[in-house]
Amino acid sequence: MPSKVHGRQFDVVVFGASGYTGKYTAQYITTHLPTDLKWAVAGRSQSKLEEVVAECKKLNPDRVQPGIEICSLTDEDLAGLAKKTFILITTVGPYGKLGEHAFKACAENGTHYLDVTGEVPFVAKMLKKYEAAAKQSGALMFPQIGIESAPPDLVTFSLASFIRSEFSSTTRDVTVSIHHLKSAPSGGTLSTAFTLLDNFSVSDLRAAYTPFALSPVPRPATNTTPQPSLLSRLTGLVTVPSLGLLTTSIAAATDAATVQRTWGLLSTLPSPRREQFYGPHFSFREYMRPRNWLTGMALHFGLIVFRLVLATPFLRRIVARMVTQPGEGPEAEVAKGDEIEYRGVAHADVDGAGREGAFCRAWFRGSTYYLTGIFLAEAAATLLQEDVGLPGGVYTPACLGQPFIERLNQAGFHIETKRLEP
Image (cartoon, rainbow, N blue to C red; front, side):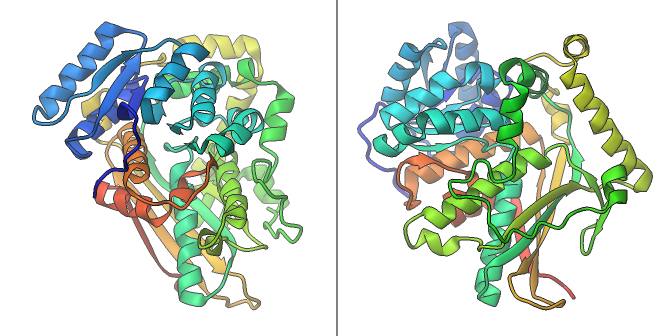
């Protein structure tokens, strides 16, 4: 499929290409995107970028190799870079500290934007400051399009699409579980966690993580999110039919913010995209599957302790020095053994105890950071080659729709949806 004509020097630029996730992204582009793609790697170090280009050439010498763009973290440099490219991918974080320059540059210069932040307060801040500029310039901007929070967002979209198609109904509720996860965090991920309270106040966090806070329309007045029992609140354990015993997910609030924004965005888009709206009674929950009730409780209380560490500056600084540092991560051979699987259930918005439902399974075998590179690269390819039917603005992964999901299926991130068994 031919790429869109846009008049910019590059189709895609990967900013932060010498970092841990940036390298994976460059590798995937090299081996999977069209060989005539006009692209570049960007960052502050000429020598590190030259190493990335050399590695790309080894992987695929018969394609157009990336250019090199030296760019510092300033408004001026990022604006200059944004004007050169149709799409800017940025993997430079923590975004709360380092990400605003790139976001601003793309919003103001009509450059499509992709990032992998897991920092909901960053997204909330960028919405307030630059969403109007993106709408005016025509920039399509997709924060949180990595592991946080593309998979649960796409699972939810797939479940709601299936229910609409099979049962001619909107969706009442979705529950997603991280069914299986075998992966170690990179230094960048850990740095983001340990610096979150350095970049945002407690009130910023509280406001951003309020349910439906990022949605462009208010929380549904008829929202029916099931409330956990006292025992579940104490232990973290809950049992969900078709998903089994579940416990607290560390990504629950982050992923919910994205899914709830998708819900609101779909209700405001012009037809035919508005027909994909999940419905007025929609609710979302996310959990994690433990091996048994004992490990489920341990995970729940471990997360409580982890949050206490993050909230205590002295402890936060000590632990931050002991973990993997930014730019580092699991060795490639080790990361190849990573596995991740999500499962989800949803019910049609009809009355009755036996109402119709859907079951979704999404999985990937291989480095979860390589998977993030896949999300970024295939999102860029979708923007380059598909009509996504979106005006300028700040969006979520699911807003790229079924063409994005089909590309991911071909790339190894498989999503299967079927009727929920009685």
